[in-house]
Image (cartoon, rainbow, N blue to C red; front, side):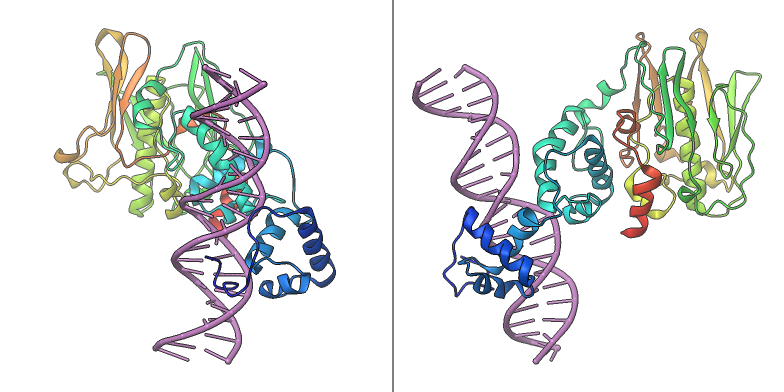
Length: 345
DNA sequence: AAAGGATCCAACCGCCCCAGT
DNA sequence: AACTGGGGCGGTTGGATCCTT
């Protein structure tokens, strides 16, 4: 069964011969394609218009870029796919000379497998469930720096200096934060939080607990929730030397915060929901962070220390962004293509 | 060398959207 | 408003090629 546009015609199918290519090329370069349904007749081809169009777009077009995909192109595809999903035509628009078909094939034949091999679900970009625990275990000697100028995070995993060492959260991620004062006293001295619109303070109390206070004067609930989550998450990162996974998600990109708003309600329904508590664990002095919410939603974040200097954690399932992904170097160009994408799409 | 499985990728299919009537 | 045709898109297929045994 052919397309409705050419179902009455006797059309050839299958691979194009060099002669057919020649005819189509000559016709379009001299006459232009105009109405595709008329191209086969005018070009002397026994193909349907759609087939001609496809052949031109995917193969004959002179501005096509041939050859294998570069690493940069691969990263771009992954970045955009994280937001748009299988919208190959949209993705291809960000890759000059590449077609949607090409991108789709590359994804299915190559990228998909790479992501799976890294323990990531290619559809959601989340950690695959059966890999999530393993991914949190890492060697003390593992070192990985990401200092791409377009990355929002710098991550350092040297044995003496783990965790996020700096971050530059652009104001585009916090469009609702207009009047937040900067008041930051980090637990880990080399941590720098560079976004002036976003801050919190941390104080070590006499009873070996740490109180974190989010300094937010915004009245927007989503921002407050986002910042609370973010603070909690970073605190865990710093205190436990773990790689925090599954935190920012693409939906949050769309709601404008860039961070996943919590769906939880503060304990006692407090208006001020900034309080976080870090407890130092017995003589090991290993910190655990527990965020208190309403009774039925308690202990969403759990950090468990084991004997191998590794950490397991449990997160709210609704979180599906992963720092592991950025850690792998795949998540880049946030401030350029990704920001642009938010506006384009 | 040959067979069979795996992979790649060009092309097709079917659906949707939109503009024109 | 309903119909029609063209264009665009994502999913799928199947033949060619590569790889493994």
